[in-house]
Every structure is written in structure tokens, then in C-alpha cells.
Picture 1: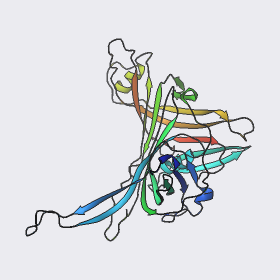
Picture 2: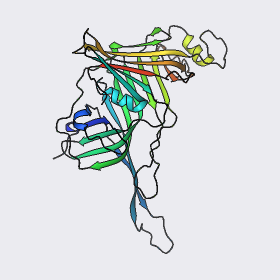
Picture 3: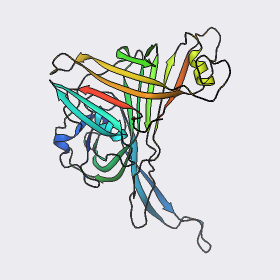
Length: 336
């Protein structure tokens, strides 16, 4: 008999202290329905090089230091989403008014981001792991016009314990999904006729800071943060291309200064938040005050209608203004 993947479970919770697995995972943790993914070991079998005086065969092997990392892929649901957003960006403030919880997540300037505890039950009973001191290294959102809003979170964990007891009845996020017909983009306060979009945050953690005398990572410190993304459009004129390649929408020759405009991505559920008064849709809104477009080619081909994937990079010219702000509205009062 094999073990089916679908019977597993993954539960996330923000730790109150580094090095301490969240004791209240069963009550304050949030279980997520996943499309796929798990954390796997990064470990090498250490074998000897050929030795003079030895034979032609490898003489011995030991196990080296270890860390755990992997990607979780999921359809976006709004009650669990703030936990991963807070993990990748750093801070989250919550307010509940007449049944509607508003979670405002902003980037942390410090290189020390929140640590998560993760419970991962593999299959219907193959194994259950507890991970301590996990960080969200990468975060990705994407959607097509005729598809679901989907996400991927890449985690790195310091330690793992096998043979854990799984939470018998984890609190799942069963809130509504979001589809492309309820997603809008505005650039410089003008609606974009986008066919798709992607949004990415990368914290550039290292997963190989091993120390003598220990099997585990000694430090998880975020390095330079990168916030990037893209959207696909069929251009109505060449203003975007000129802005990306020349620097200004009206330029006719290349310059060196980039145009920086606000980009807002708004994703809304069809359903209302059940307890909300007045009726309020669930939503996630990403606001990036300053983005610069990356140069690209127009690339006509045969009788194809010209369309382009336009990549952007978030910038932070003024230190007092966050590089981006994410606001999530849902029924969940707290960020797990």
C-alpha cells in the first residue's frame, strides 16, 4: 500500500521567539490547502578523495550539515495569505471593524524577519515533521485573465524534528478563491488592460551558513530585498516601450533617467465576507509607489497580434515611504 499525497496537511504559525517551536500551533496556527510542495533536506554525503596507499574504492562516508528548504504552491485564500506575506515582508497590523478584518503588511527595514513554525504531515501517515525557525525567502503571486490567483512561497528552515504528532483537527483556511475576472491593475492611476500579472519578493537568504560543531545553519539574515514583477499587455501605442527603453513616454532617443510611477494590483473575491457589515468583498491590494519598467523588444511575428510581457522593478527613492504595502481584507481577525 502506498501513501497518497492529498491526505497530508501543512500548518503555519508565527513564532513568539527564535528557536522555540510554536506551542499553540493547534489553536493559533493556520492550515493551508496546497497544490504541491514540501521542505526537503539540503545535505551531502561526505566521501573521501582517493588516498595514496588506499584501494580504488571509496573507503568511508559521513553525513554533513543540513538545512531544509522548498516551495509551497497554492491557490490564494485570504485568511492564510497574511501569514506568508508578513513572513516575507516583515510586519503586519490588524484591525477589525464590524466583522471585516483589515491586515496591513509592510516591509521591515531590519534584516531579521519573522520566524515561522511549520507542521508538515506527509501523506496519510508516512511521516510528520515539525520545522522550527523557518523564514520565507521568496514569495510569488500570478494570475491569468481566465485563471485563478495562485501563489508560491519558498521557505528555508533551520531545524526539523521527525515523528511529530500531527494536529488532529487543524484550522483550515476555507475562504473563497479569486479569479482573473476580479483582478485589476492600475499604472500611474490609469487602468491597464493586462492579460496576466506576476509579483515577486525575494529576500536572498543564504541556506549554507554552517558552523563548526553543529549540524545546523548558524544564521538566517535577509540580504538585499528585491521586489519585481511583470504584466502582459497588447499595446495601444508605443508609450510603454519608449518609457522602458528611452526613459520617458514621449522621448524619441535614449536617455538615462527612468520614469517612476505607482502600480496598484487589486484582487477581489466574488463572495462577501460573511460577518461583514456593510457587505464587503474579500480582497488583497498591492500598492507599489514607484516602479521602473525594464527595457524590452516589440517582437512582431507573422500575423500575430503584438503583445509584450513587461517586467518592472520596485524602487524606494524615499526611505520614509515603504517600497510596497499589501492590504488584505478577510474574516480572520488575526495573522497566524
